[in-house]
Each structure stands twice: as C-alpha cells, then as structure tokens.
Image 1 (cartoon, rainbow, N blue to C red):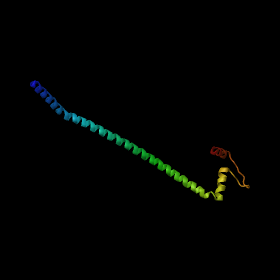
Image 2: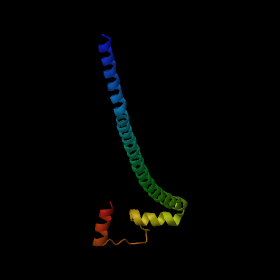
Image 3: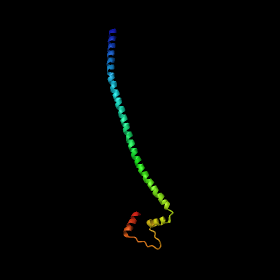
Image 4: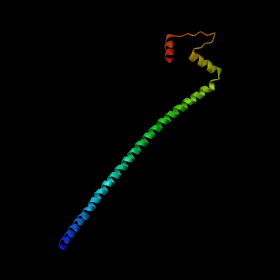
Length: 121
C-alpha cells in the first residue's frame, strides 16, 4: 500500500510540475489578451471623445455665425427704433410700404410695379 501511495504521490507531483510548467505561458497569454482588450477600450474611448470634440466644435462655429447674424439684425432694429419718431422716416416708410401719397401728389402704378407689389404681399 505504501508503494501505491508513493506512486500516486509521484504522479501528483508530475502533474503539478506540468501545470507549473504550463502556467507561465498560460499567464502570458491571458495577460496579452487583457492588455489587448484594455488597449482596444482606450482606443474606442479616444475615438468617441474625438468625435464628440469635433461635433462640438462644428456646433460652436454654427452658433457663432448665428450670433453674428442676430447681432447684425439687432443693430438694424436699433437703428430703425431710433428713427421711429422721426417724421421723415415715418413718411418714407408710409410711401414705401403703404403707397401713401400727399394730397397734392398723383400715384402712378405701372404693370411691372404692380406685379412686384403683389409678390411682396
């Protein structure tokens, strides 16, 4: 019985030695896989971040352009607001938009002008 136990012990030692001999390779492979997965995750994260940065920069450019347009429109409206109480400005706007004339004036409407005024409405 001791002889059988000694053989079993030798077999177990051999198996353990084989496992120990195999384990560094196995560990190296798993480390490589883990490193590859980590590197892939980092690359994916960086790619998504770059995409977000580019889209935000594009949006910022669009908003800056929209802001310039709004500032220009605001300045035009301020200019009109300054002139709103000016009688000459009121008279000119009434002539342009409402086709009003003074009592001593005669308004002539030509065919081309009539078509253009209908398009404006």
